Image (cartoon, rainbow, N blue to C red; front, side, top):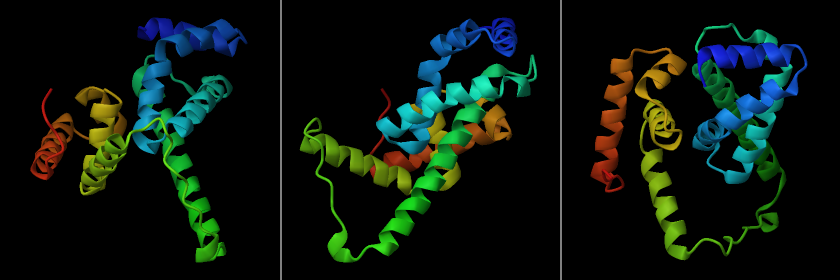
Length: 184
């Protein structure tokens, strides 16, 4: 979707025309989902947050400044919503965990959709990414999981593209040392 098309969709939303939102939804559903999933790491949470994202876009369409780079604008909102969710969830888990005794803790079984090997591999990859510093983790999530360009990442994080590419290369080197990343 071009800047002009996006701007027209926002103008339609401001006039109460739901078609403008439908057009943005059709064009960016996968993009927003990938960004959110990259932050929260849970399919169910990513789906919920993505749905909430489009409601928020409808409600706050008047905040968009035409011609200001709509993809970065959308990505920033989605990323912030996912971060807010993660912070809230961690706080809720911590509060509920401190209120329960060890006897009350229930470990949920792994769903039958996943094979044991997939679960182990997923845990291993998360552990490897967890060894990266937070800025590297963020860039890896945005680049690989959200399939964003270095320029988009640079715009969203408001840091030079050279810094983004350097952090990305350093993170990939670390993941290779841990044995968890191969070029495809």
